[in-house]
Image (cartoon, rainbow, N blue to C red; front, side, top):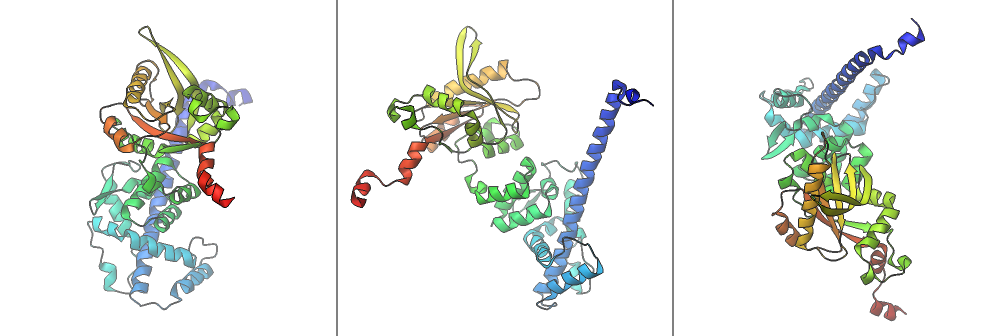
Length: 390
């Protein structure tokens, strides 16, 4: 066989089909391995919890067991003393899942010498995923009237779980971060950053109608997480522009954003691709000019950003809804989700914005911005205080 035969495009489709099958199989295998690992750690955690909490083991038992395991199984990783304690934490914080198993889960408590019960989490998971494919985020187990996304639960690693348990206090928070990890494929460091930013308590602070206007709950969740309620545009400096703040209009702000588009995208969030500013659409003989137009890869949708220099006005949403209608009719292509829009204004009464948003069916939100000079003003004492200091 010659090199020409090997590189022939004749079998490209066959190669693609086989490659896809291999990748899908590998993905399923990895998911299965992760599920088995979680079940193992859950069972070991349950065993350690019972024996340590009941006082059957001495104070240094976990450290001794870890050391003995490393001697008897050279090269074994993941079973340090601290990780064995993490397994106990994992079980104790999620032992509520035992209630979902159709099999009695108290057998282990009948005898100190019982083998490690690794099946309890697996039974809980299997009972939840029996009727659907692993990976569907709609499969849930209800604990205290709160839906646990089981497929998401078993899709993230043990280290992710420990980071979530260490950084959150309530069941609601844990479920939120599990779903966030699953949806956004977060690394452990990215997850820890989101926890440090208190993403749970800051979710949905931007007034929006995403839950009502986006039928897909998963898509609505992504949209809510993507946008902030306020943006610091610290690359816009009024003094450098040589203009007073009250003389700045939307076009000046827009030009500054365009000139600093990389900074703006980094400020705005993940997955944004800039399409253009003052994007023109002729609709039925009428000119329409969109301030800023983006495409977001995470949402797979066009995103309109309309700039307003003053306070929020209800009419802004009507204009934005009109632009989204045009994009939906003339610009959206197959495979994309409907476009959504953001009003970026100087200030807004959130309660009033939420009230007005109820009248609109297209996904929209309202955020505010601050320029660098405003940030500086916040950090410096006011004029009277400065006089006292001097």
